[in-house]
Amino acid sequence: MRFSDLLVALDLLSRHDVNDALEMQSKSGRPLGEVLVEMGLLNASTVADLQDGLPAPPDTIAQLGIDSRIVFDMLVKFLSTTGQGTTAAIAETLAISRRLATVLIELARAQGIVELKPGIVAGELRVDLTPRGRSMAVDAFANNAYIGPLPVSLDEYSRRVLRQTIRSETVTRTMVGQAMQPLVVEQELLAKVGIAVNAGRSILLYGAPGNGKTSIAERMVRTFGAMVLVPHCFEVAGQIVKVFDPSVHRRLGTGGGRATAASLFADEFDPRWVPCRRPFVAAGGELSLDMLDLKFEETSRFYEAPLHVKAMNGVLLIDDFGRQLVRPDALLNRWVVPMDRRVDFLKLHTGQSFQIPFDQLLVFSTNLSPRDLMDGAFLRRLPYKIHVHGPSTADFALLLQARAEEHGIEYPEEAIVLTIELIMKHGTPLAFYQASEIPQQIADLAAFVGRPPIADEPAIRFALSNLLVDR
Picture 1 (cartoon, rainbow, N blue to C red):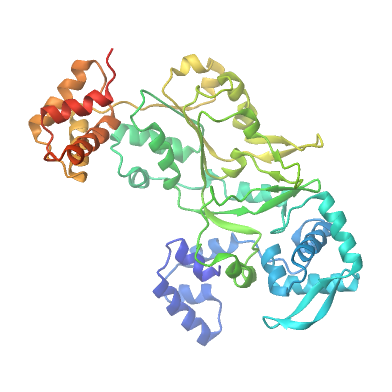
Picture 2: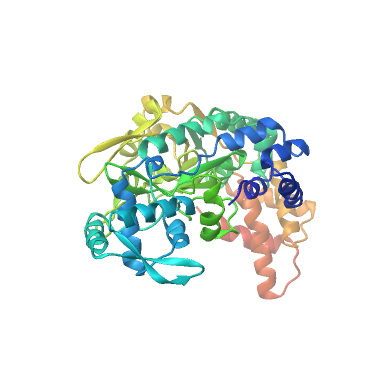
């Protein structure tokens, strides 16, 4: 991805404006940033902030910031697996620029690790391992079987995390309101959520089930607009820890693919970093303590980062808190140091521990009583305790009508009044999920039996008989 593509991915400029700027740049030969400012498309401070925040592409092995042995090991493992390679293939796989790939090949040739073979592949010479290189590959695979983008150093990763801290953004009421759409959130609750998100401190959402606690938490990450850079992996004590996860991280400008990243993006900033939206990670009843530790792959001998590291600089939701197999107090104790000191400690299988920043919006969501789940000491560590109430009758009526229209259900005012009366007569509190589910049930009934899509008393009673449990 080029800098110009990044501007489009961040919704800062349209593709049309960017193309106009690129055409002017091609005529003038000046940097794109200067052209954008001159055209009035961006101000100088915005351009400077974006360009200053991007790590420069390394031009030498030393600038990678990791042990050169790791670099050569990755090269020989790749060539051992593919048989032969080209400069472009090596650059793409190791996530380095072609300039650096050329440097790496020349250094490997000088050490008798690789040799150039006759014949051209896609306009490039073929690179193959020498006997010494194949011997090195055997030793490299014994260390670990990871083949892919080169890691960044732990120090560089930690600095980057602190630089793009979740506390660096200012969240406004308007931004929170837009992020919560289409949820119905009363203004007081909206303000509490906004203040908590803006502070970037730990949050407890509690209240009866079915009123949107999880939905609110999922939308919190939408309030943030900044791009973050996520490394494919980082290195610590010679070990590789994979961080980037396509199932978690929303890569910006996904249309280009890895080939584009190697050929274009690599020449503008370090492609070992992936530009992403701030991540959102959720864990519910399946959460266990070992999911918060490094996962060591025995056969491949490298690590997968735990959940909270993948959520770095984003939002981590502990959903249905109190319903995990692990005791609530044991799970809470795991977070004491990270929440207090904003650092965490992870341990390698060798027994060596290392420190890593803890920078994320940690959100607990529960429909159980907070006092039954945690003591006063831990409640103190959750500065924002937000009670998510059920809807008022007026809000319930508005949402019920809106959802009925979405399903094509005719829902007259007297039917809305009857629905509310029946729910309250049953002794069940009004909940937002009911207003969404009742029209769906009526639509399902109408489709199955071929009756008109009307919310009359029989249809309403049918829906409520499915939703409400007889006492």
